[in-house]
Image (cartoon, rainbow, N blue to C red; front, top):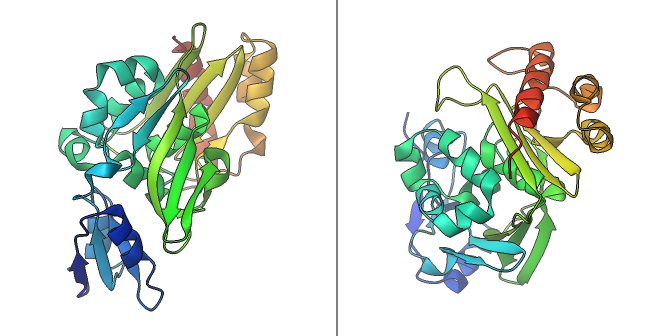
Length: 275
């Protein structure tokens, strides 16, 4: 199939892009890397009246590293993140997850902000941002606001992103001495969509555990966090505490399989904890 007819706009500035996004008389869709959006358009799952190409907005690219956090522009490509040695050293969980994102061709085009905005529950980056306690910076014609990753993901491809808004940057706490991080996913083949995955950030012996591809959004394992925060050796008890998660099946299997895989990825991600 091919997408429906649409108008194509390539704004020269963020101000111009936000002006286009503010139109409420048409379905206006932003294009970042396009690695998920364009196939969805071809299948007519997304039917834009206007497609706003953000690839000319250099102001949304790059990263700034501060004493305790990094600000990553929404249009920063995965390949640029991976090649930034200083950033990867300060964000080791992101460094562990990036090689699992599809393949090199996808990573050369895909952007961090595009993945965050798409809110695909099967992908790595939303869960990594959730585990790290990131903050999503949004902008519209009326101004800017920030939303914690804990509050950003609402359901299948559904987020706190409102009409007329764009993700412009992500603020991510950086690693401090003594912090540890783990990541593990199960997929049929390397680069395939994950059947289940877990991302863990442990700071001051308090873990944040985020699962992906097990529910309708990336989800925290709060009971597992509490158990492992009290006793790091209680992995078996933590595995049994995942009943609080609303597991959703998909083409790979039903909720019971997802529950089983979540226990596996939790155990293996915890075993991978490293500073």
